[in-house]
Amino acid sequence: MVVVRNAFQMERADHGKRDEGYIELSSSIFFRKEDLKDFDLSEGDTVEISRDGKAIRMKVKTDDTAPEGGAMIFNSIYASQVSTMDDFKRFNAKIKKVEGNPTKLDEILRKFEKK
Amino acid sequence: MICTGCACLCEDIEIKDGRVLNACLRGSSLIRNLNGNRAKARVDGNDSTVEKAIKTASELIQSAESPVIYGLDTTTIEAQSLAIKMAEKVEAYLDDSSTYCMGPFVEMILKGEVPSTTLDEVREKADMTIYWGADPFHSHPRHMSRFTYYPRGKFRQKGWEEDRYLAVIDVRDSHTSSLARKKVIVRDDDDFMNALITLLRGETPSAYLKDSAELVNRIKKSEFGVIIGGLGLRYGLKNLNLLRDLMKELNQVSEFYFIPMGCHPNMRGFNETLYERTGEINRYSFRDGRSDPEYSFSSIVKSGKNDVVVVIGSDPVSSLPYDISSSLGRSKLIVVDPRETLTTEIADVVIPSSYSGLETGGTMKRIDGVEIEFKPEKEEELNDVYILERLMEGV
Image 1 (cartoon, rainbow over the protein chains, first blue to last red):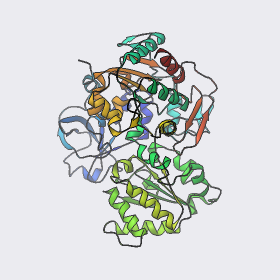
Image 2: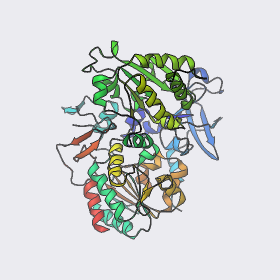
Image 3: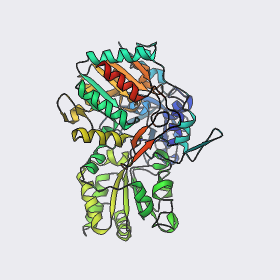
Image 4: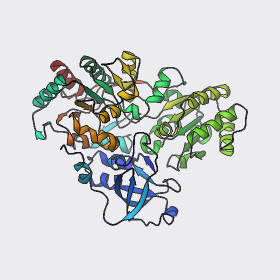
């Protein structure tokens, strides 16, 4: 998994990080079209990305700049749910197809509520 | 107008009839949306006056036993200097995003361990540019057109068509690599850098022979080259000594420089300002009088040593791993920002500010260290300098 910057996503961030377009791009995971079959995935599927007890659901999309045999996500609070300080930009994670939709932003932010 | 959309700090932006001219997608978006999504003063989740928010923040900082100040890469050097003074006064931990970004590279440059140059020199002289772990097409959309590849330089009049050679080293194909004469997909940055060093020393590398040989042959033909290192290199390169060795070997066969590819408009300014004051560039404890990885924002917040966090112009809830950002709620959180962010949503105190450089003047340092002065037509009074001065009065 690689975490990258994307100008179109950053452009949406200027509308606020609750902007629908920003959230849609931030909650997407990109594969090369030719890799989808190997992962047994189709465009539009929802997948759970997990590692070390942390998980996030994202929508599958295709992009020819995704790494071969891997996946690409954009820098955002979604990526931050599964990255760590040591491997901020590149890490291994488990990906499995799940039912439902990508994780909602409020679902993530609820974890930050003060107890 | 000067754009603060990224660390290129483009100085040729014009606004005519409401249209933003010359800016890239990122810059024009920032400028067009300046008035949207602005932060509102809040205390404990309730709307407040700015005065009350500043007063509450000041009291929290004053009573803190172990405050942390973080961010500052989007503000001016003048505000950064005040934040450093405040950190000194209250013996705070002080850090910025360079710890997780270009910090190690900037430190090597400031300490003279790797040669660096300005982007203006690159524009005039460079005949070879290597982007390593960087995708300026998305992160700094005008980097190639203003500085490295497309301009007609003083000594490169034939531009990219004949005079300039672009190479990209990355873990994946990118929109930038699709424009390059040579692209190398690497699995391990250390291995590829080792291969280049080995070849430059006249020996045969054990990996990446074809790609490294092709690149070294081209390097040997170049007169003035630059490696632009991005976050991919920062996190891919495990042994920083390799970069020192590579730059040394490159300069045996050509004239070669390294420029980091930081994104925040004034990260370099923070690094240099703190460096001038303390001899260190980031993760500094004014209580202990030294810099250390254990004083990084992430380490302090995760350890729970802090009781108050002041975030200025940054959104760590979005940008830092959850392991770290989830600890922000353990202490009082004060955020100074021109816009609402995911961090302002969980803050105890929000102080709205203006956009540094766009709505308030001052100086910043471009990522290559060149100082840029901002003189916006209209100066907002409620800015980071004013807020920090007020917070300083309280402590």
